[in-house]
Each structure stands twice: as C-alpha cells, then as structure tokens.
Amino acid sequence: MASLVKTLAGAAFAAVLAGTAFAQSAQPAAQTARIRGQITAVDGKTLTIRTREGGTASVDLADDARVMALEKASIADVKPGRYIGVTAMPQPDGRQRAIAIHIFTEQQRGVGEGHRPWDLKPDSTMTNAAVDTVLAEGKDGELLTVKYKDGEKTIVVPPDTPVVAYAPGRRDEVKPGAEIIISAATLQPDGRWRAPAINVGRGVTPPM
Image 1: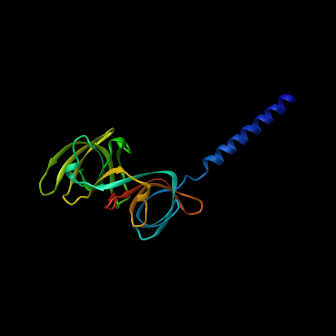
Image 2: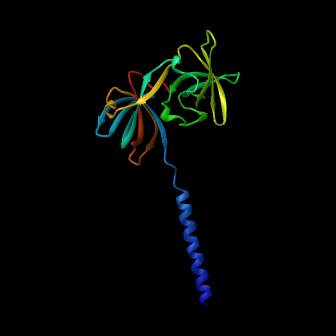
Image 3: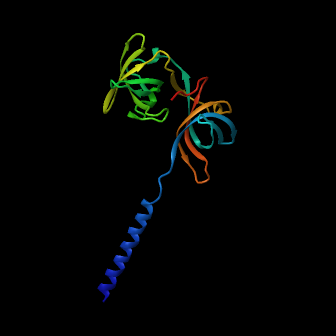
C-alpha cells in the first residue's frame, strides 16, 4: 500500500511539473521592433517619437541605455578591413544594390554578423560583414565584396548611397528634434516600448 501511495504521489508531482513546463512554454514571446523617427518630447527617461510611418511611439529608455551617434561619412571611408552594415536590395544577378551603408566602430566588430532580411523596404536585406575589396566600377558606383563567417556578398554602391559612421554618443543628444533608430525595442504591457540602446543621428537621419 505504501508503495502504491508513493507511486501515485510521484505521478502527481510529475504531472505538476509537466503542467508548469507547458504553462511556461505557452507564454507568448515578447514583441520586439525597430523604431525609426524623430523625438518630439522627452519626459525623464520616456521619449515620444513620431515614427517614419506617421504614428507615435512612447519609449522608455533603460537607466543604463547605450547611446551611439551616427555621423555623415562617404564611400571613401569604406576601406578593406572595415566592418560595415549594408542595407540593400537583392538584384537578379545575385548582387546586392546598396541603399544605405553604416560603418561600425572597431569595438563593434562582429555585431550582427551575417546576411538577413531587413524591414526598411519590402524585400530589403542587411549584411553585416568585413570589407574585402573595393573597386571603382564607373557610372553605377563602387563595387564591394564583403565577407562574413558563413559567406560573402557582392555589393553595388550607387553614387547617391547615404553612408554614415558610428561614434560614441551622449545622453544629452537624446532630445526633441533628434532623428533616431532603435534596433530592439520591447513592447511592455502598458503599450509603451522599452529600449536598452538608441542610435541618434548627429546632423543626419539614420538611413538604415
């Protein structure tokens, strides 16, 4: 009889554990998003942002939020060995046609390395990789090859492609009028967003 009681108790405990595991797995994943736009108001750590899509987002910056600035640069700054991000559109010949380039600092090397879909435009992509070669192609612009750990891409860079470079930012640059991009904001139960980091355009609009 004691053995039966132990067996039943063990089964009940296992059922509780299974139910707990199911409940945990059933929890919805936190919703994250990129937020692009202009800061219209700052109230403590809460930002009001007019998004590029025409809406409004309320974002709480983390107390220790990392602030990075984006400064104007040029294709001349894109040299072999530099670690860059390329926002692009896939071409029929397999190449990528750049619509924006951002140059990472050396401390950011390896961030987001690889090639993936991006949400700037329908079907756009993002490739974070090291520049291997830079060739002057002519009227179509520069031709880059970039390499990342799982492959490489050939990038056509039209002459009018915006190029920006990362630099350390300051919290006082997070102010009304600043153009920003937040890469990973998390939606909170109250409908506001929370951000661990923010990128602020320093005289430019973040093009990515």
